[in-house]
Amino acid sequence: MRFLLREAKKVDGLFLFWPGGPTPICVVANPAAAKAVLADHRRYPKGDDYRDKFGAVFGDGLVTSNGPAHARARRVLGRYFTRAALEAKEAAIAAAFDATAAEIFADVGSSYVDVDVQEFFHLATLRAFCAAMLSEDIYAWRLPGMDAPGAVARHVAREVSFGSNVVGEHMLYNIPMSPLLPRVRRLARSAATVRREVFAPLLARRRAAVAAGTAPDDCLTALVVASDADDGGAGGGDAAVMDQLVTLIGAGHDTSAYFCCYASLSLARCQRDARAESHHWFWGTPRTHRNSRSAVKSNSYPAVSRDRSV
Image 1: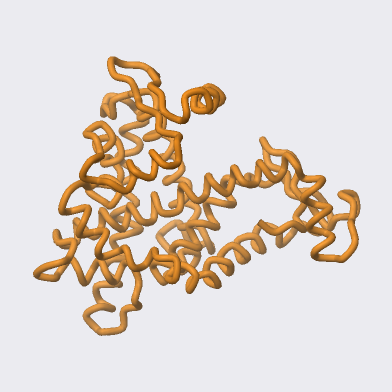
Image 2: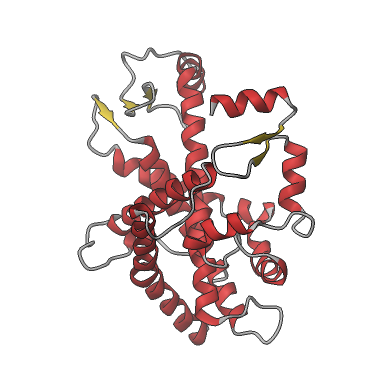
């Protein structure tokens, strides 16, 4: 990462990177250029290598599809990701983060506790995304052998994180997604199991709600309705809806989780100033680290005051 950041600063955010294999990767770290690449799907279609690697998990979902299929999916889902729509979901998102934090810190008291911040943010963002975009409390889901509150959420977050690492490393180092590799076989089993055991029952429940006229107005309902529409819909029946659902839940929360991790690391590096400022705002007077109620310390990040909100 240091190498990539250093090179990006040298050449205005555009350079070639040879991680391995016969072809280089073009790194686009310039904001204007990145926006153009991400927005202009006709001029910059997703490459076969990208589609093959991410398609192992997402199928033909929003982040892997090209052409008319991608345009149709954007029309179906776009209205749920406008600024106004997201602001309307602010309370649900905040409640999901607060509830996840409260459960983790329930037994902390006045002592220190080791917390894997990556696990926390994966759970919190997954919970927030399901609440805001699918009208579902994933912490309430139950499966055989996963009866404890949040067990299904932890299972999904863990498998998504594993898949993200595998696909990301295969993309970065130009490693083929060959079934000869044990981790690729493990990823294929994981993706199939999560689709069958976690998402298929959710899709069946939503189809029943749509038929009964009781479905909420959210991304999943829009996908189900569009899949049966004669025109303007995503088409493809349950298979197409499943690809979009897996993409929404997987890609939808994973990048946000890692961004929150990085934001926490950045805050932890300047925690003294941040803590003093937060105590000034919350309590009116500075408080020292020693008499803070509790602190969070991850395996790799410095201690972060629990009294600070992010």
